[in-house]
Structure formats: structure tokens, C-alpha cells
Length: 422
Image (tube, rainbow, N blue to C red; front, side, top):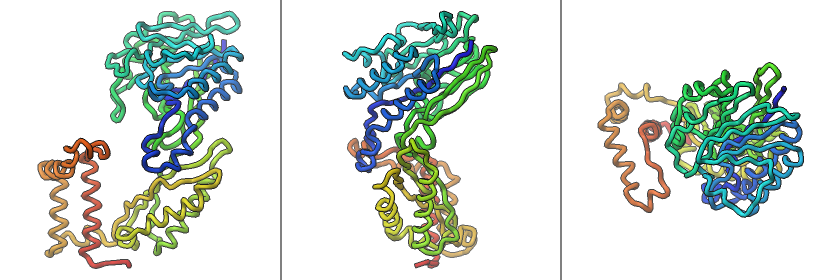
């Protein structure tokens, strides 16, 4: 019998967008209901596609302090699926462990929140016949360091077996190591499909068996750029599996590099970015409310001195915000970052027997000397010894140090060479 389902994860309903609230309050207001609205789109999609069931792979809520309106929204959307006879199977993750689900809100009978004390198996029926079994377990506490995947073993092979898990597969950096497991751990558990949560990036880890992360449903900061959404998964009568990613985000985060080596004036640069804004807005579909973009300006530039030594970049950003932020759909330049360099490069000076040559050779030595790099890192991270400052700053690592060093070299070339563009 054919099966169709939708899988999503990391909804983070009621997300507070704290970083945006601090840096860009007006932008944070645009995001206020974006995660909730993206979830409504998933329910709309379930109904339009007439799926057999919906799975949610953890972190439905952003934390224990969830608003009543978000809880009611979740219940009301599940009610829509209940009326269409569509089951919902949920596991709790690190942001919403089982104790946080103890609430006065009662969900309809089509909702199955899997427990955390043992692995549960939920049979899904269609026309009176079991078409699939979903195996899963929830987090009992926020920090789960046990390999939960080892507990999930498919036992029935007469139906399609699906594992539902909130986990860090392959010890991905940048994500907490909760329920850590390897790809081989998942492949050896006799599942036909693994539906995962926790990693916010959309990724298919394996096609046979199908193992995938849907990512979160709405980007919340610049490093969660690109489309966000869910997967529609279809299984035909021969157990052939197909899948399709469906974006549901309301606001798109985007990062883009732009070489400005041929831009000669700041007026030209501003006009270029105005045109780029118009181009980006023309690409939006009817469901998208706006774009938040970070541009990185690159290349050897005749504007290096003017852009690095004046406020022209901030002025340009203000022009773009005034033109495009208060319209619908909107575009907001999160930042315009300079990765440009002076037109004359390091190789033009490094062999000269003068002060600028000495400066460049010393900088090159630092790049390849671990002791010097460690000493510089200690100096740069010294302010973090203050507990108050540590709340607002992050520790600088070696990669960031090399970026700082490169920027310093470019600035040094500009100031010491006397080749000014303004």
C-alpha cells in the first residue's frame, strides 16, 4: 500500500530571537510570529497533500518558558489534522524534554508524544491495515549523552520501519553532542527510514536506508541561511522511497559575495546594491515576507581606503534600509562586510628592504608560528577573563585570528604604501 508522510523537526515555536531583539529591534518584530506561521504552512501542506501522517523530530518548542498562545496554536493545528484523520508522532528533544510537556493544554487523540523511559513503537493504519511502524524515544532531560539509536531496533519486517530520533549523527561541530551516534549505528538497526532532528541544516545523510535531517522550519540568524522547511516522503507499493524538500520559511536569510574590483566610486557601489535589492525581491514567491541579507564585498578595490577609513558603508546601509525595509515584501541588509584589499598586493612589497617589507615578513612569520599565534590569542582573549564582558563576546579561535591578521596586513599595506584612493 502506498504511503505518504511529512517530516519536520526543530520548529522552535515561540522563539524569542534574543540576538535580533538586542541588535535590530525593528527586524526582530518582523520575525515575532515567523516560526509559528511556518508551522501553519506545514499543516496546510499535510492537508493539501493528504498525507498519511506527520512526524516531528524534537524541539517543537524553543524552551520551557513557552507562551500560552504558542501552545494553543499547536493544539489548534493538530485539531485540523485530527479532523482529517492524520496522526502526528512526536519525540521530545533537548529544547523540549518530556517534563516540559506537562501542561494544562490537552492535545487531540491523533497526537502521539513518545515517552522517554523506553522505545515505543507506533503502528500507523490505513484502510484497516498497518502500513508502517514508527520507533522512537524522547529526551527525559535536556542533556542526553547516551547513544539512543542503539535502543531502536526494527522488529517487524512485514511493514515499513521508521526510526524517529533527535540526535547528533557523526559528532557535528557547532551542535551539542546530544544522543550521539554514527551513520553506521543507524544503518545497522534494520530501519527502512530514519527521520532525524537536532541539526538545523537540511541534509540527506544516506539514500539506502533513507536517513535525513529536514533542518529547522525558519532561519533565526544569518548562519541559518537558505530555504528552511520539511520533507514530503513517498513510499510506493514496491517499497521504493522518494522524497522532496518543501520550503515553508516566511523570511529568508541569505549570504552573498560580490566582487567590486570594477566599482570606482561609492555612488556606483550604492547603486549596485540598490539594484541587487530589487533583483532579490523579484525572486521571492507569494509566501515569503522578506529577505535578510549579508553581503561580503571582495576583490582588490580602488575604494579600499575610502570604505575602510570612513563611514560610507554605514551610510549605504541606511539608504538601503530607508528604501526597502518598510515595504512588503521587505529586504534588510544585516551587514555589508568588507573582504576587499588594496589594489596593490602583498607580493608587490614583501621583498622590499624597507619598513613595509619588514612588516609583511613579520606578519607572514606569525601565520606559520604556533607559539606566536598562541601568544596573540591569549592577548586577544584577555578581556574574556571578565565575567561581565564574557556575556557579550565570544572567544577568538585560530581561524578568526588569521582573518584578523589578513585584515591587518591589508590595512597596513594601505596606510604604509601611501596609495590612497581618496
